[in-house]
Length: 123
Image (cartoon, rainbow, N blue to C red; front, top):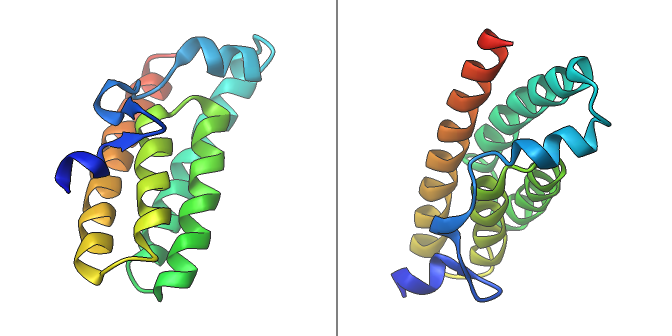
């Protein structure tokens, strides 16, 4: 069961990039200021959505996870997107499965936010 939680559409989520900077650059049309704005918005949104997931019912968690997945895909935050998809699916399962998925999502968000902070401080 633990292995299934790490596999989405046949891809191992441990291989997903923390942040695909080439994808982000394409989404921002090469505009560094827009990249910074997108990263800042994602940083704030991911923190808010994750905190809401921890206090809501499974149906709301599924919706919030879906929103986070879309945002993560938009900026190239692969590990967050995959972990959010796992949480979205797990919301329909047993509470222990959902809790484990939220723990993994929290780690992915934390790792991504740390990288974003580093990128924003160096650019």
